[in-house]
Image (cartoon, rainbow, N blue to C red):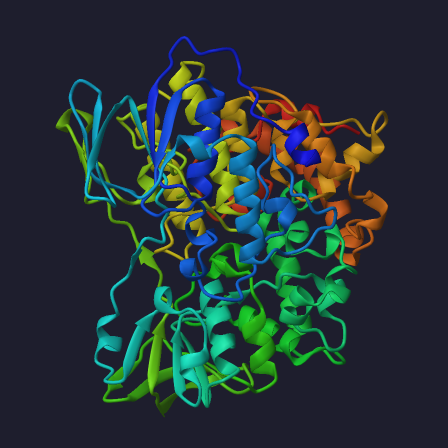
Length: 625
């Protein structure tokens, strides 16, 4: 009740350019898009195919599989101007996040602006700049909209990828992860799970509890990132699921125990990538044979360390570590492999015949997780294959006039993964910027805030949008070299800073001599989205203070971590005060500030590599010491 009373929709001065907007989809991205459009004074509505909000996080039991926990904290997953109700920091269950979304929609009066059980059949943008959106209702009737802007928030998890050709030859049961609800039907079976993403990790571990045998197949070594950092996961008997579900454990955790603290703080992201990566490489090497810890810690180190060391990997990947690829923020696979409850097979290829799978080039020992001196061939029979192979985009219902140019479905062809060049404010895809660390709702909120300003005429897209989009896409492709197909991937610290600059809500840097506590939180707390409500359009500083007042910097374990005290803090000061100065001075002599290359791993802060988040002169002058 206190949150509802404190954080309400706060309409800004009515826009002189009030636009008509249709938003497709009432998931987390669609909800925040609607809220931001309405708050900016636009006439906006959502069309939603189901009868509830939330998308994959709806209250419907079958919206996603049972037992799902978020991979970022309840604080980080909250929208910037509507803090989570819980005073403590923890990982929410999908049902808890669904309730948060319902509270958000109710608080900002969004439900009355949603047309439920309404499916978009076609959306056509004419040469006159008007969208004609044709929809069908569940009761058989139709409804049409004519609007100035279309915002697509259907998400990237709509159309499952087809079964890989080699797997399709398997003669047992095959299903996609989108069909998985729980493990009950797999009791007593031999199951192969294809993939090592977060869903694959959960699904494999759930199946392993009831199946006769469970094997996970990955085409290459993969990186696991535990939800809890060393202070917790180095404890004897640590098990990630136990720490997620047992109140005794998660109540013992504070800000510094959460992965986001180790990956998204400004101090950590001020380090050069080579040092950021070296800390992880050393950590993985230390973990793989560490004594007196849970076996899962050893397996996590072995799997992750192998990612940069197999044949065909560019040499610079070692100096990127977990930044070269998508990192699975879920260590349950390592926990269960360490206890011998499932096996992990890493092989570039697999051949299927009948109910048999042959892994011809296995490069990690499926039992111990160690790198093999030479690849071996493994053969195993299975009853069922579960394909956790992801989804593909399908915008068959979109049609645009040729004057706007060709519309490509690859997110990296859209400026900041949202605005296709040539369409200006007519079209936005919100929900296709997936943070390497962080949540999609947070990138969607920033995109929504800018799009609302764009529609109002208060902001504009760059004149050279095509050039900038292409340059940033190349930088992302080169940087995330081990995840070439995950084209929605972004780096939260640099992405959020870049969008905040576009919006005008980048927080001012506090001064240590006047505000030492705020200075410490600014540099060493995670880059939670509430930082972007301190000033600029839509500023709501009370939301920021509500979050920050909950956590004491000296009890948060962000300053006492040995890696922070011995490495991050001294190198952070050297990088900011010395190296960045030289980087800025020699910036004009670089061929292109937007292009990525090996030198960028050494000559600038990690936050200044991607998404056009260049080092600014004011960054050098406002260290805040």
